[in-house]
Amino acid sequence: MSKPTADNQPTDSRTPGKPGRSEKADAPQLMLLEITRIKAYEHNPRRGENPEYDRIKASIRIDGMDQPLVVTCRPGESDYVVGAGGNTRLQILRALYEETGEDRFYWVDCLVKPWSQESSVLLAHLRENDLRGALSFIDKARAVFEAKQLLEQETGRDNLSQRQLATLLRGRGYSLSHGLISQMGYAVHTLLPVIPQALQSGLGRPQVERIRALDRAARQIWKQRGLGDDQSFDDVFAALCGRYDGIEWDLDSLRSAIETEIAEALELSIHAIRVELDAHLLGSVIDAPTPAPVPVAVSPSEVDTSAGISAVDPDAAKAVRTTNDTPDEPVGEKAPAVLKVASAAPAGDKDTPPEPSSKSSADPAPDPLPRSITPSNPPATDLKSLRARAWTLAARLAQRNGIADLVAPLSGKGLGFILRDVPDPSLADQLDADTLGQVSMLWWHLAACAEMTVAPLEAVVATLSDDSILRQALDNQDAGLLFNSVWTLDPGHTAYRLWRQLGDQDWQDLLHLMDTYRLIHRTAVDTQVRLWGEM
Image (cartoon, rainbow, N blue to C red; front, side, top):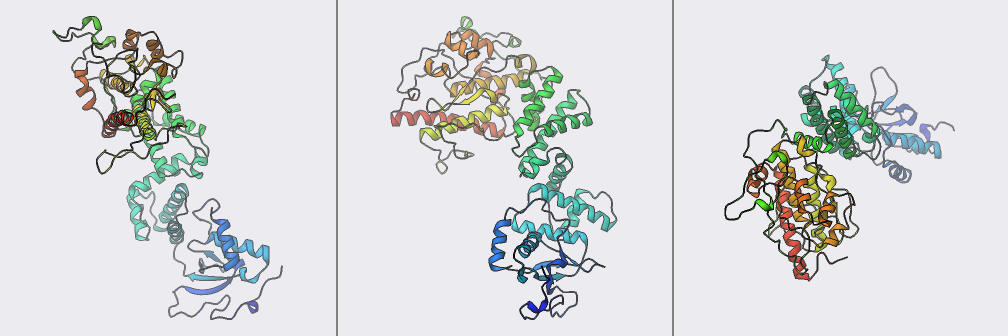
């Protein structure tokens, strides 16, 4: 292919390879440059192909470029380099010239800017990409820390602090908060070596923040439990991260692996570690139990409504509740011949997890939950949405309290969810009284909201596995088995075991769950639907 000449170009005020008119010698100049004299910027923040490549190429093929390519020239060099975005357009122009041989793709309209500093060019590319919103979080983070290295070289300062870096960047027209710089540094230095695929496939700042929070919480447990120092944890954390690296990153898988690693090292139940990790994620570190009022436990034979309730040793973790009070019969349904158990209340104080990923084929995913239910912010009123909301709330409460595996969606009937079984019995030996009380009361409250012990027996038992303790208790009408498996506190302890300890998010979810339970039953009455009769 022969080289085009300037004679083949349209006549205008610009001369190929010569700057146009300008009043200032150091002002940007409009020029026509041969494509062979323009190089891509080697520190281009974008590491992969532009997802808009095909669209941009089609547009340039038809209409040409809608604005000049910004270029600059390093001191002592004769060729130019892309100066502020435009690497994709340069790549496309080269491809189109190779494909067509047309002169219009060989001579490029350029705005030539005077050379400043290497860091200034890199930051110009970052600003341009920010305007277009086209950079992944990890590409942006890598570019920021490349700029940090360049600034250190240019200023003669080693190891710029986050504050110093933020100040220098702001002085060059690129403002970042200290928190964002910190997250970028964690992504570049800690995560990129172990999960490059996940980061390059689009893992963003929110996910990086959650991984970092998990890192910190698990590290605290690792060190407090005497499993090793920071370096030993770093080795384990890096190995587990690398195990799950991929385009479909799943933080829950990493968390489960960390919980398993710690639980096996300590020879403890994974449920105990899960509860402890949740507490660390919200800063509510679980220490040795502190003196507290002794929980009261009763059995049916000990109940004397005239004399009050007698106390039983809480360490046995065997508490039962009176069966004198019969739960209200579900509206429009026959009274079930199953356990008559009153519920306790939930507990928690955990990090907000992602929404449950399981989907019910009959019940749609709920709308985002409001912070409060008010006349100006009413909840949904159809059964499908209400059931889906109840399941979401129950799963969220359970996940933040270490019993997420016990909650499952229930499609097309009941309250929208069920409990698969009782909490792991080993928790009674591994948790302090306050934490065990919270977890146990949460389970009882979820059991009440799912109507596990008042719903028609055949509707509930069919959803449980054969080896489930809960199923055995319901099948055999064995209240003692259930009470012996779940620590059941005197309801009078609800306030200090539950209300005083719940985090704000758990408290809101608990209130919403109770509201949703009531709305489901009201809606069933209004629409004359048998909640447990839809099979």
